[in-house]
Image (tube, rainbow, N blue to C red; front, top):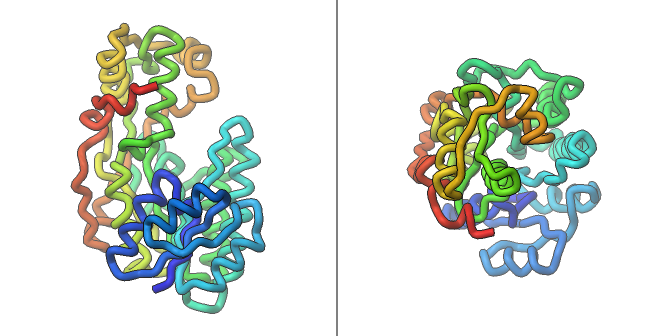
Length: 298
C-alpha cells in the first residue's frame, strides 16, 4: 500500500514509518520543514509538503494514497482547546477525502479519555465530550466518520509513550522536579498510568492498517497500570532530590496546568488489541526506561 502518514517525523510517526517500509509498504510523509523532508528521504519515504493547518495539503496527501495514518498533533498546551479543535478539523478533512473509497484511516487518540478510575478496554466507547475535555474532539470526529461509513479506526495511546527522544509527559515531570527541587505526586501517588515504548507503537499502527475493520478501537498499551508514585521515585533518585506527595490544592501550585494529568488514574488494557491483531509489545517498561540518562540530559 501507499500510506500517507501525518506526524511522520514525530516521536510516534518516526517509529511507524520504518515499520511500514520494512513490511513492504510505500510511505508518503507529511513534512512542514526542510529538516523534516530530509529526514523522511533518509528513512526511505516520499515527501509531501504541508502541515496540519493546511487542509488542502492533507487532501493532496490522501489523493496519492491507499490508506492514511494520522499520528500528527500540534503539541502546544498553552492553546490546548484550539489545537484539539484543529485536530478535529484534520480528522474531518482526511475522512471526507476518503469517503466512499474503502481506503483505511487510522486516527490517534488517548486511553486517558476513556474510563478514568477503572481499567479501560477497547470495548469502551468513551464518555467524555469535548466540553468535558478538549482532546475528546478527535474521538467525536471519528464517531461522526463511522456514522458516514468511512473506514476509520482508532488507536488509543497511553499518557506515557516513552523512549529516547521523548518530549511528552515524563520530560515535563523531570523539568518540574528540577524547577521545584522535589519530585512530586498527588495524594498517595497510587493513581495509575498505562504506558508503551515508542518502538512498540510502529507495529501496532501497521497491523491496524492491514487488519483493522471499520470502527475498531485499539489500545497501544504495554503496561496496564504503573503507579504514578513509582515514576516520581525514579525521577527523584536520578536527580538526587526528595520525593513527596502533594494534596490536590498543593498539586495545582506545584504542577500548574499539568496537575490534571499528574492526578489522572486511567489504567487501560490491550488484551483485545493483542488478540485481534497479534500485536506483541517487546520493549522495556516505563520505569526501567525512565531510569536512563537520556531523560535527564537537559
